[in-house]
Amino acid sequence: MAMSTVLQAVTEQQIQALRREPDRVAALDEDRSFSTAFAASINHFLAGDAYPTAADHPLWPMLQGEESVACGSLENGEFGLVSPRVARRVADLLAAVDVAAVAERVGAADLGHDAELYDLELIDEAQAPAVIAAELRDLVAFYARVSSEGLGVVSYTT
Image (cartoon, rainbow, N blue to C red):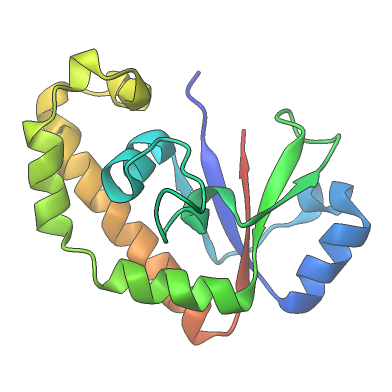
C-alpha cells in the first residue's frame, strides 16, 4: 500500500491545542485538506530534494511542516505544523510556480533511476508529468485557500 501525505488546514488555536495534546491530531476531520501519494516527487521537483530542509529551498515546509511534533498515535510517530505566517509565504511561493515547466522537468527526468522518485513507481512513467502537474495544481489551490483564510497546516504521512 502506498504512503499518503495528508495536509489539513487548521486555526492557530488548533495548532496550540495540538502542541499541548498531540494525539488530538487523529480527531481532526477538516474539509479543507489535501492528500497526495507523491509527496517525495513533488518535493524533489519543487525543492530539489524528496525530504528538503530549510537550507535546501524556501518551499521546504510545504508538505512536511516547519515544526515536528512527536505523536504516538500516528504510525510515523510525528506530524508537522506550518504556522499561518509561514503558510502565507508558502502560498505566495507556490503561486509563482510554473506548473507546465515542472511537468516538463518530470517528463525529462530519468524516473526509473532516481531513488528519490520511488512514489512514481505507482504509475505508468508516461503519466507522471500529468499526475504531478495535477497534484501540484491541487497543492497550490490548497495553500491559496489556507492563506486567504489566515490558517496554518498540519501534515502527516500515513
